[in-house]
Length: 139
Image 1 (cartoon, rainbow, N blue to C red):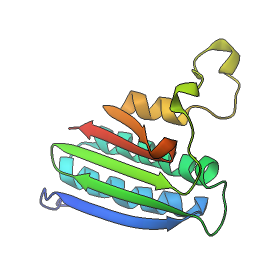
Image 2: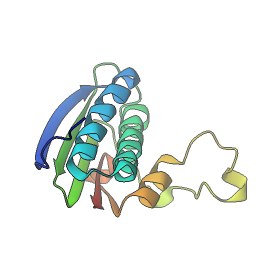
Image 3: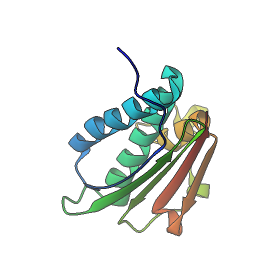
Image 4: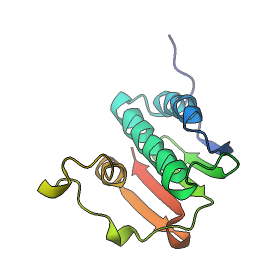
C-alpha cells in the first residue's frame, strides 16, 4: 500500500465529552501521523499521548458531563507535531501531580497519563489554569 505524500496538516475539532469517541478520533490522527512521518513508533507515541490528553480532559476536566466540549487543535509537519487539547473544566495545578513510579502510587488506578505524555513527547505544557495542554514532539 502506497503512503500518501508527506503534506503538513492542521486540524481543529470539537468533541463532545464521550469516552467512546476517543479511539476513532485518535486512530484517524495516528494514521495521518504515520503517513506524514513513515515512523510507526512516533505515530504510536502521538496516539498514546493524544488519547491520554483527551481522556484526562473528559474525565477530570469536564467530569464526564455529556454536554461539555473538548477542543482539539493539531498542527503537524514531517518535522514536528503540536497537539492542543482544551476542556471546559476548572483546571488543575500540574505541579501537584504525584509521581506514579513512587512505591506508594504503584497500585493507584490513575495518575499515569501526564507521566506518559512527558516521557513520550518532547514538551508538555499546561495553560489556562490547567484546563488546556499543549504537547509537542519533533520527528
